[in-house]
Image (tube, rainbow, N blue to C red; front, top):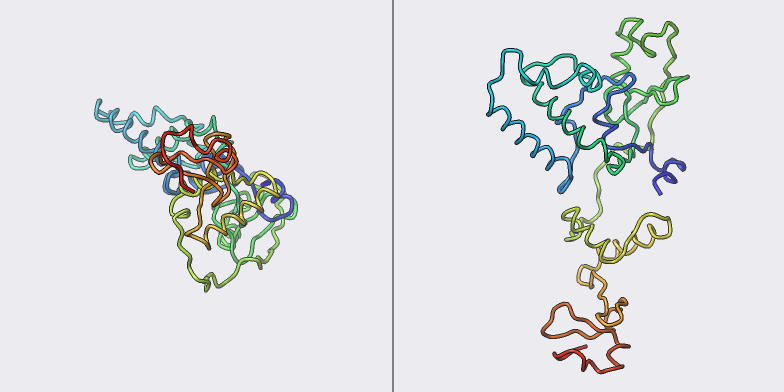
Length: 283
């Protein structure tokens, strides 16, 4: 679905969390720092970062740092260059060491951390581009924002795009018109418990088999999510028959008054009248 969306220009780019924030390649000038990492409630990396910080604090408490600092010995020059850093000051070294160790933990499973770009990002500062994006006439994946373009014009000739090449490429502006200037939403705000946390939304999708791996499933799942949003009192989760293990339609089953998780569909109830269960069943 994401590849299809990218092909049809619904989304701008597909990447992953590691490649976007932990690896600085090409002409990117942005420095890798923990403050740049986006996160939502329940994300993996904040918890992993807290564990790593505790480990680093314990290591620091267990020994006295020498004048050069042990953190300098831990991080290689190659890692420094890859992260966009040029020095290891006392304050920056801890953040860099955290990012280095966090990157090592995420790298083996980086394909699981999918990132979808809905807007164009500047190649230099990795911020969302608004106004004009300056595109290279020869390089396919090079684009910079207005601010970085002004800085580009003030650079020495050898530092301009492409860096370390004698022949420089021409940049031309492309106006971004699909980003609205007014972002105020005048629609009524609807509250739903399923959107309070990511886990609540995940539970809704898992409990009702809502999937987004195909266009047909994505359409159905989106319509059902909107149904729950506009009908907060309607049953949100599918009930499964404890006898035949099939889904029970709303209002077409029997529930035990004592056991909270015991439900029987009409077909199974008509076969034995619920005599196999010790408690009374109600419709």
